[in-house]
Image (cartoon, rainbow, N blue to C red; front, side, top):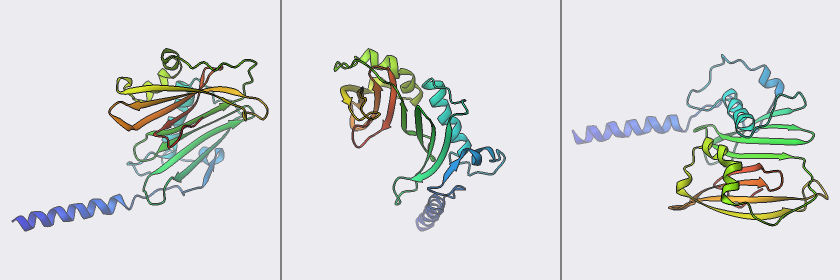
Length: 218
């Protein structure tokens, strides 16, 4: 009886591993999907229900850029691109990169296709300032700017410590420069669990979000 149970368990594990390592994606890796591809895409097309599909990824990305960060993407000046890629060829995790770009603004969001987690948000718009300050934003100022994004991402701030570093970037748009506050939230019980939000200090808008970054980014 014991051997039968062990045999059944092994069979179930084999079936699970077969499906795990044979996930089928209907989109090609490292292929850039343009606005024309998106318009021609049928909502009725069958997709693997276990994965975040292209249309759902676009909706998620637009929600964060428009509703959470407060930017209007309806202008015809925007060029939109969608890319499916993989960070590590040894893993089965694929990511959607959804980006918008026009002459004075560019933004992008990376979404994990398996769990829908937001891995990275990048936002850059032209802004030139006459004055700069080396003073850091306070915790209250950081949360006033980034609170909506943090809530939407589902983080419990009671579990995280916050550290803020203020820098000046002299390479921003050629000879111009700007201040950034790099805000790192680190789990009080696990230093490997962290997320980073970078804020334009003068414009008071978010320029970057990164989940578990290897290095500080802005």
